[in-house]
Amino acid sequence: MARNERHTSPASLDPVDWATHRRVAHEALDLALDYQRRIADGPAWRPMPPEIEERFETSLPREGEGIEAAFREFRETVLPYVLGNPHPRFWGWVPGQGSPGGVIGKLLAAGVNPVAGPFNDSSARVEAQVIQWLREAVGMPEGTGGVLTSGGSVANLVGLAVGRDAVAEADVPADGLTVEGRRLAVYASEAVHSSVKKSLQILGMGRGALRSVPVDDDHRIRVDVLEEMLAEDGRDGSDRKPAIVVGSAGTVDTGAFDDFEALADVAEREGLWLHVDGAFGALAALAPGLRHLVAGMERADSLAFDAHKWMSAPYDVGVVLVRDREAHRKTFTVEASYLDPLPRGTGASPESTDRLGPQLSRGFRALSLWMSIREHGIRRFGEVVESCVRQARYLASLVREHPELELAAPVPLCVVCFRYAAGLPPEEANAVNREILMRLQEEGVAVPSSTVLDGRFVLRVANTNHRSRREDFDLLVEETVRLGRAVVREIGTSASLGSEP
Ligand SMILES: *Cc1c(COP(=O)(O)O)cnc(C)c1O
Image (cartoon, rainbow, N blue to C red):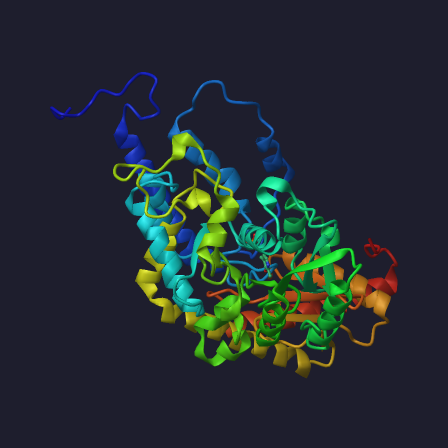
């Protein structure tokens, strides 16, 4: 033992034998990198067999079995059955794949493990820098601040909380929500993400605060109907007080973009807070050829988006940017003597992140993102976005050209909704496509997800996948048709297909 090496306390979590940890750590790192490198060789998803499920029901370990045994258990029971979203044919929901550089950032973040909170350390500088880099990347004005969150849901929650407080002519954090007996109203298109509704619930505004505005044929908010609703709700004697307009940059169903210039004009005129949910679509701002889709987005008061989706930062990390930093701090500042910043020392933080969101102690989420932006440069992320959109259009063209397939919505960005139609009556088509989807997944071919558009159950491919290639979409189309024909044949011979929910 080196002269200055401290003895490990018997109650410490440090190993007595560091050599074993070092060996396992190197193996683990190789495994993580090889997983990403070779993932295309395996299935896009693998269901867990019952004998493995049972191994997750063993009782609390009283005594330790050592890091090697824990690692072995991971390799046998966890590794083969993780979701698989790093796979090139995983397009369900809105997936991020991660990247080898992200693995390194995450490893280092866990290694140095700072409390990314209201402290005077480098992790706070890294986060502040990432926020400003991303602000510039998505085109928000200088002076705008922000904070990293666990994802788009919490980013939406933060933006809406600040908006609620900024618009209510009352001290909402202290006094609650009643504003002269009128209920605060929030306006968003029918296609707005469920996390916005959940936020209203959490914020005490209630899902009933939401005024759901219809969409046009391109799934964009009907600004004319929005204006009618505002006129109605703004009248004397109305029990609603218009407060927030939520725009969507890339709706989850179809990837549609609202008209942000029009929404910003309305919000400005009516004194409303404009929040934009741009979970994946905000990143269209990174691609010069797609920037027109987000024109006016920079006029938002708050903008939420994800880094773990289209930027493939390792889960979980989202971003919220808020133009009015004072308003942002006001909503989340709670005085506590044990957190009072001092002018110098460990507590003299450059920005108290606990005053920008619900969390006090936070992980060092910023590091892998910071390293990844350095590794690739922001331009590469724009190229990923552009390439994914080109591939989505390619898939849409394959679908249009195939006589048995039907494109179910326009493809403004990276989401393609389609289905196996082949002249089937609507009810039967729904059942057939549900069965096709489950088989695509169970056979490990690909993982699209689904949605329902105008009562039609459709397969939904959200291509935010930097590993996808054109041939992956060729395969998807071939296999969808193969399975569609097989399912239709089976229905012909037996009526035992999964029933409608
Ligand atoms: C994914 C998504 C969200 C929620 O973000 P999470 O990171 O999953 O919490 C919100 N809005 C849209 C449009 C999304 O696609």
